[in-house]
Length: 289
Image 1 (cartoon, rainbow, N blue to C red):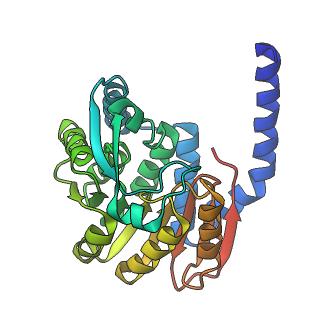
Image 2 (tube, helix red, strand yellow; image 1 turned 135 degrees about the horizontal axis):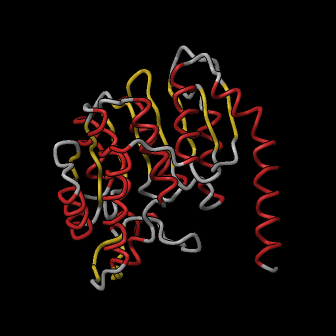
């Protein structure tokens, strides 16, 4: 397809998507629950790239760090406790014990949340102003830096983030120090079956949880159930890569039907679950960004 035609078709598709999204946008932005309306504003601001001067400085510094990592020639050997790639067929025993892996830092960095999705986390934390946040899956610290930067700008809150591999966690620590975010984030190291329980106990009551650490449907449900007793009565759980595999998609469908979850927002890549006993059950789906 010629560039001009491709640009035209892309523009038409985007306009059609916006038209299809319009009723859902109105329902979220005008929702009587302040939390839902705040998430709507975060979606709108992240999608449009709306930033004030302080936000822009913070995010530019994080993106500069991302670029340095993408250009790094270093390699890291570590135990990977995750599900591997979507085509991998790792056993539960392999994921529990870890698979020895050597990868360039630049390739590991490619698995970090892209700027637009990281910005959504940032904007949600800016809007919701949580006091206690937990992230499962630190990686090199890019998404954690976005979240911690939002807490720093809010002037309140703390993030606990868990990374299974020591050498990768060390790079994430460098990321935090370079952004002067040490006062707003703590990195805990160890596989989730060892590190999650003490992290939950330390962070409770948790207002905002970002689950990005184990791309396996059974594990996603297990960690949600394990975390639930430690969540604040009014809280948010963000699930990453809900369409990564059919297994993950099935787990997300189970989350959406869980009676403990009041409202869900399905963004295709990310799923947002709102825990609030006072809200009527609703399920939104939105093509975003």
